Length: 217
Image (cartoon, rainbow, N blue to C red; front, side, top):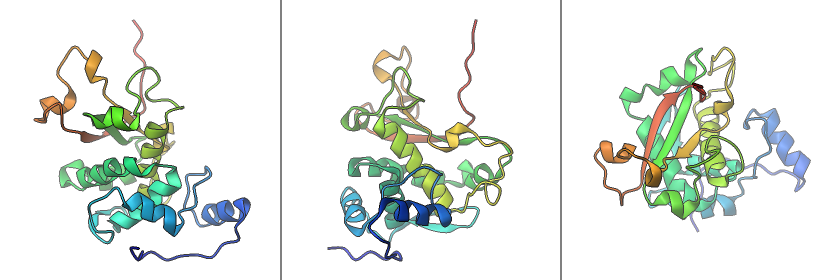
């Protein structure tokens, strides 16, 4: 079994004790988490072909090292299934591009958040919602992948509201922001196709976006 490098804590095997520890240390988004036990983290890592100690990027504003293991811990906390993990790792790889300017997105007073747009076969494989209510609740993959991104941005990067994240009012999209494109009913080329990928490739596009706006005519 792989030896994990992260610090471990002994906590009474009681729901409230575990949740309170994470809340008191500022490690959650305010919602209950799944305890990242070594067994659960190991299972999450089983869906990655990268070494657990590999650093995918450094996350501003605190420039914490986003190792594969640290991302897996946050994915467990968010409630992800292991098969979701490649999307999370790919998203952080994308956000490491200097052109994305993650520091500005993390620290701005504007209410933007990284929005993940998923294309390709993985959409159906893991059950991502690309149709009615795609930005809303009730779809585990959408909800927990987006939440894992946010928890990682907070716990690794230090984007705590009012400390590292200076968004004046915040936004619901800072809890979770992940959708899939409805390629089958799209009258245009898919986003990933326009960016040079074939339909049989699974891709993650990350953009800094405001919450959705309705336009009524």
